[in-house]
Image 1 (cartoon, rainbow, N blue to C red):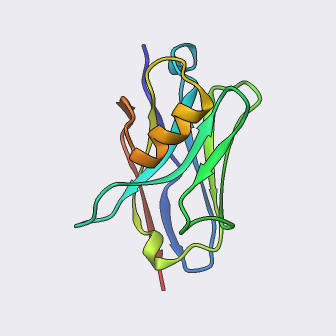
Image 2: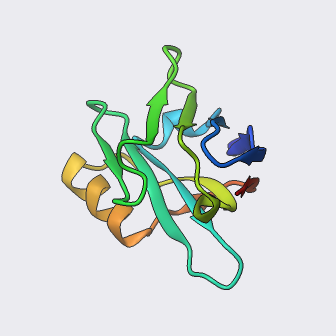
Image 3: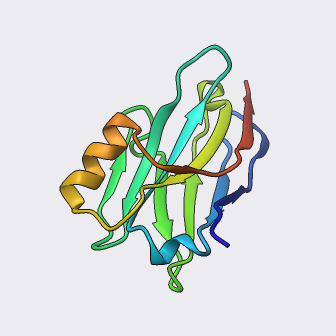
Length: 130
């Protein structure tokens, strides 16, 4: 059964770190484009980091560049988001998502910018206190 399971959220103080994990079991056979997104109360969902399975290309929101790193495990079944130097404005529900089908790197980058993914997992809450 295909599903995306995100975990690793929690509460930390500003400047702290968290690592989120997304188990993409099942989806690895039907997608090569995954990403992390977040949504804070009263705000629109935004892309945080994207990953192109084909060549390891990564994409980041300007607000997290230099602080967050997206990666995958060697078995290529789990997507990670390492979050360092967390700020209160990073507080949100974080979701992992996948695009249906195998697409080009250019298309993956475009889908990340427009947050147009097909499959969404349940979220994991990240709360950063000042």
